[in-house]
Image 1 (tube, protein in one colour):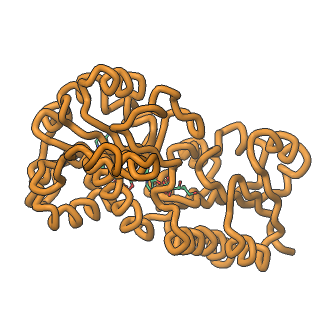
Image 2 (cartoon, rainbow, N blue to C red):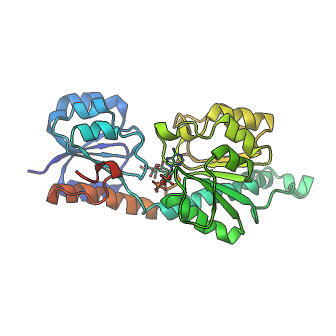
Image 3 (cartoon, protein in one colour):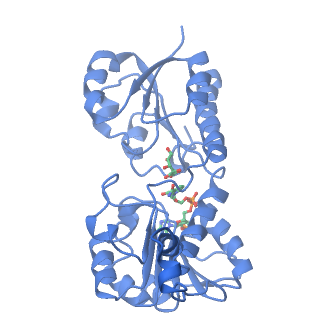
Length: 317
Ligand code: NAP
Ligand code: 8YV
């Protein structure tokens, strides 16, 4: 008998292929059909694959009394209620490491795009303005800047590695100081005051909610650039928008938002902002590596009871 697995959110054809060899698959495309599905087949489900966007709440787990594992297709697991999973002895897994380079590249790309006004310059040509109005206005260099990294973990370190070619002075804020040569700031506002660019790459969730506050944004200042590739909840979005509108913040490169997939209308018309629909890891190559690990976690768990990459809270299960 193949175990029954529920897929919540998108999975690639390669993932579906691999999983359907081992499991009986059921798919939910979102909250609209989830309740009905759970009522119908909840009691037979033993595993869940979640892309993290809709998440897995305690109530959803309750509807699956024989659930053993939730395999997250992504490294961030803020939308999966890990405490509720632990109470039910459910193992939660994620995909650390395999997306570091891609997300770091995304952060750097957003910074370059904002500083050098890539989107505006492209639009300038497409609107036929170059022959009529001459060269595009000068932009800001990315060379030799002070870059503050909020969250010096796996991806934060990959960002720091890339910053060497920009001759950046690297500052960072995390919960604890690391054994690195970059300058540590225990106080995020103080770091923001001392950097030209602030790149956010912490987990989401209660511990980091609005950690980039109005105060931090004001400290970054009118020439400062905010890059967010972490979670929308990390930045106080209304405060950021107000600062951008008033010219108290220089620009922003945003891959994540507080109410995805809804992006505040106010951001749409701003030419000092570059927007992406949460695609930091969204390449064929990296999603393949993430998808393989997501599947391997499920397959290994049902083979020998041990997943490959449990989240730290579930490592002992
Ligand atoms: P990681 O290795 O666990 O690193 C997280 C870092 O954040 C650590 O340095 C940690 O500090 C710091 N941190 C955690 N809570 C904090 C707090 N309250 N205040 C200050 N710093 C805090 O994680 P990772 O693999 O680099 O991934 C980081 C996050 O990136 C994910 O959780 C996810 O939300 C996001 N992400 C986004 C995308 C995207 O598509 N945009 C893709 C992948 C990941 P300590 O080391 O001191 O504990
Ligand atoms: C993806 C992410 O959006 O890994 C993460 O934490 O945010 C991204 O890589 C997603 O989880 C893929 O489904």
